[in-house]
Each structure stands twice: as C-alpha cells, then as structure tokens.
Amino acid sequence: MRSPFRIRSQVRDLDNDQTRIERIRAVLKAVQEDYNREAEGLSTRIQSAQDTAAFLSGSEGPNFGTESRHSERLAEAERNLVRGFERLKEIETITERLRSLEDQLPSAGDPYSQTTRTTA
Image 1 (cartoon, rainbow, N blue to C red):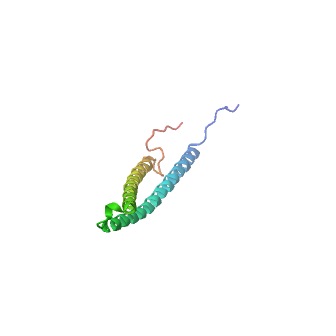
Image 2: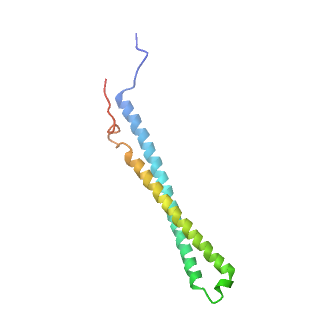
Image 3: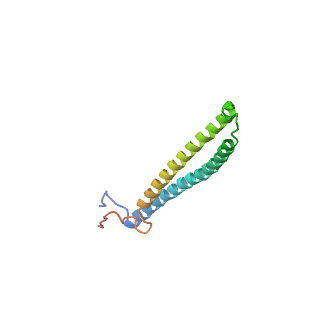
C-alpha cells in the first residue's frame, strides 16, 4: 500500500524556490525603477523651481514688498523646493530599504544558504 503522505523531490522544491525568489527580485527591481523615474522627474521640477526662485529673488525691486503676486510666487517656489527636497529624501530612504531587502534574498545559486536543510 502506498503512503498517503508524499513530498516533492528536493530538486523540484529548489526550482520552485528559485522561481519565487526571482519573482521577488523582479518586483523589487521594478519598484526601484519606478522610484528612480520619480526622482528624475522631481529633480527636473526642483531645478525649474530653483530657477523661478532665483529669477524672482533677483527681480526684487524697490516695490517688492508691495507686489503681493510677486512675493506669493516666490513663497510658492520656496514651498515647492522644500517639499521637493523632502520627497527626494523619502525616495532615497525607501530605495535604500528596497536594496537592503534585495541583499537579504538568498543568492540565485544557493537559496538555502541562510537555512539548514536536511535530506531524508
């Protein structure tokens, strides 16, 4: 009589584990690429806000304080710069954590390098 409990071969387990790990790596890579694209676009917008702020600061005339529209645009450019730099820092923190996660994954050649596996 055949035993009701059967396990898969170790080779099949290894193949399945490798496939799963590679799927995780692919997702981590895709997410990192998304963040990199966001950071590139944000850097471009930050540069534009810096240019605007520099122009507005340089065009301060004797009536600067009385021209509320001018000072409002400068204040908005400054707020955008602050928020832009904050977001870049957030992206940097997140991508560092993603890289750390990726580094913790087992190597492709040895998915059990951090575990003890016994064979029957």
